[in-house]
Length: 255
Ligand code: BGC
Image (cartoon, rainbow, N blue to C red; front, side, top):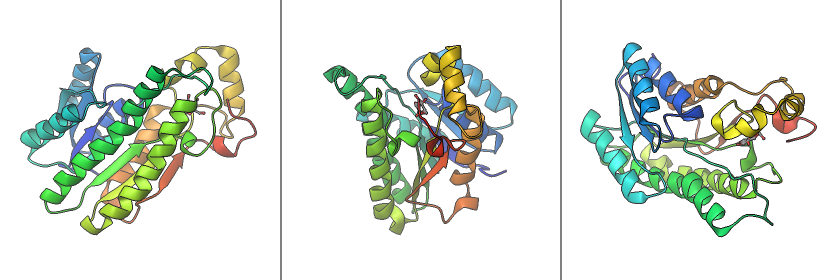
């Protein structure tokens, strides 16, 4: 098992890509700390599924846009399992608004949930990793849009662009402590963030046609890559972005 006895925290861990990562990590033997803000019943179901797979999980109701909540999330994980080994920053939202129509509130919320959260969760996890004697892995769930424009989704792209530089800068700073930090950049994935596209047959057809592999990803397909990168099998991978996009960035048209 790739993550046997490691403690893995997943933010946004009861939905979408985060939930798939939580389950995949549990199946690989990890103790999983599932951060969530809504739908406690989804957390409970996931917790049960991880337990049935033979691992342990706990849910923590923590709003990642608040540093005090992030601090509590890490404290609860350490109190429960004695240490932490992997942080996956998966919480994310998008407003699908352009520069011209984005409100201050849209901007602040997207930046807080997507970028501020990853910044401070990484800071707090790294401090804990160092206090434990070094080592540890931080994986940010970014997007192909950390680098690739998505007109009509500007605050989201700005937040993911920030995440790209956060990972490069912080990974360089943290390398001396044996801490790896990297981004995983999914393309289009069948999760709640994409419902407005995946439930509209015309939009879905156009999206599928723009992807060289011809279809959107299942969340599990992103999760498998994350589990590998979190494991010692990827011991020399850091300070970069691993793209899991079915080739969408090289395709002819975006969304
Ligand atoms: C966005 C989706 C978009 C996909 C591919 C994701 O990061 O959240 O809205 O469909 O990228 O462009």
